[in-house]
Structures are given as C-alpha cells and as structure tokens.
Image 1 (cartoon, protein in one colour):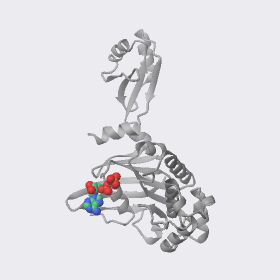
Image 2 (image 1 turned 90 degrees about the horizontal axis):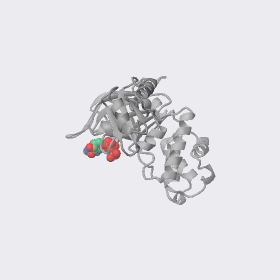
Image 3 (image 1 turned 90 degrees about the vertical axis):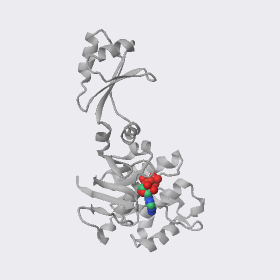
Image 4 (image 1 turned 180 degrees about the horizontal axis):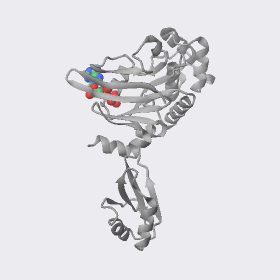
Length: 298
Ligand code: ATP
C-alpha cells in the first residue's frame, strides 16, 4: 500500500505555546485516518500545516511522496471550517458559487457531488431550510468538487445529532469504498472507532501513538473469564499470572498478558485441572476510549 502523506518532525509554536512537537507519521492510501486528541492537543494546527494554511517551524511533509505543488493540491479536498454558504441560495447555487471561487471541477461535478452526499433530491431547496446534518453534508460536497483523491476534514460531526453523525459516518465509509483516503480530526472516540482504519493520538502537541486501529488497541492481551465461584477462579489464575483484576460490574476477571502471549486453550485446561469450569473465556478487544484514556492520562 503506498503512502499518501508522510510527516517528518513537524514542530510548531505560537509564541511561547508549543502546539506540535516533532510529530512524524504516515497516512496509507485508502485509509480513514483519525487524528485524535483532547482539546488543544494540536489537531487543527496539524491539519492547517498539511493544507498549507500554516507553516511549520521545523520538519516537513510530503504528499504522494513529493513536496507540495499546485498540481498535487488539486488531489486534496478539505474542510477546515464550515464554508459561508448563502442562506437564501439553493444547494446547487451555493455549490456553483463555491466552484467559481475554487475553480475545482466542472459543472457536471456539482450534480455528482450532490448525489454522493444524498442531497440531489434537495438540490433546489434553499440552504436555510436544511438541517444541520444536511448543511454539513453540503459542506463535504463542496470539498468533493474536482473529485480529489484525499479528503481532509476537521471535526466533521461537530454539533450534529446522532442521526446526523450516522449519516456522515455512512458517507465517509462510502467515500473510502470508492477509493478516497480520508484524514479526519476528531475527539469523538466512539465515532472514530466506527470509521477509522488508522489513528494518530496527540496530547499537548506530542504524538503518543500511531498505526492501524487494531495495533493501537491490541497493545496487550486482555483475557476475560468467569466461573460460578469467582474467588476460587481468581486464586487459580494467580498461579498463571499475577495480573488478575476482578471486574465487579460484569462479574468477570481480567487477566493481562504481553501482546500475542495469551493462550486461551491452555488457560481453559489449567482451570479445568484445578477444578474450575469456566462459563466465559474470551480475548477481549479494548475500546478505543479505554486505550485513549490510558495513553493521555499518563
Ligand atoms: P480543539 O479540539 O480544541 O480544536 P486542537 O487539538 O485542534 O484543539 P489546536 O487548535 O491546534 O488544538 O491548538 C493547539 C494549541 O495551540 C492550543 O494550546 C491552542 O491554544 C494553541 N493555539 C492554536 N491556535 C493559536 C493561535 N492562533 N495563537 C496562539 N495559540 C494558538
């Protein structure tokens, strides 16, 4: 898989505030790449730098393996903040205005992008009649003019209700299917977990981790087990491993191992030999939220 974007040692300060510290990572082609971090961690600064809106103090980045050029910029659609659409104009006329300013794509593209974001039926309705979710979809439509290979979106679901969020999620998944690479900043971990294939997690300008979502989440093996007598189970498990944690709310026990080292069949037969019949045994997948808090709270 080739690399769409690579960042090398990006550093940025605003006077005394260091917004980004030596950030490096790569965005694979065809991925939905989530840039995550608490408020003020540097997400918007990072997106502004890769879109040439801001200049880094140090470091560099390559789009498609090369330093930026106007030709390459055409392959990148972006939405850093909601465009100023005219309230009294229809969706289609608003996109005509956007297109005349950006010079991206042709008139035929307008129908195509309206169909992609499922607003074609409403193309003649005034912008003022749109729900927040529809307004956001129109904004994404404007960034799709000219059929860019890559889309860069800053907090695309901000302020939307659950239905609006689900529609944007669906749209992102469809865009990925049709071959686009999507880079998005977000602080909605649940959302990111549902759409992203890769993540980079930032905290106060420092990159804490990056990679395939599975890799980031599976940093260790957590085995979840249960038996009718939890106390006896815990005693038996302590013979395998000291890291035995009781989870009172779910009546289970968590046993941790270094990544790739948990052997469920061996655990099962060890318990059985020691007189414990397990009624639950799984390798538990961490939630992104739990992993995020582990990383950002240290
Ligand atoms: P949020 O989720 O709140 O938008 P973010 O992760 O996008 O946050 P940035 O907006 O990139 O973070 O901000 C990173 C840091 O840089 C913060 O401490 C912020 O206060 C500071 N900062 C951002 N823009 C400026 C600016 N123009 N002048 C001074 N400081 C700034």
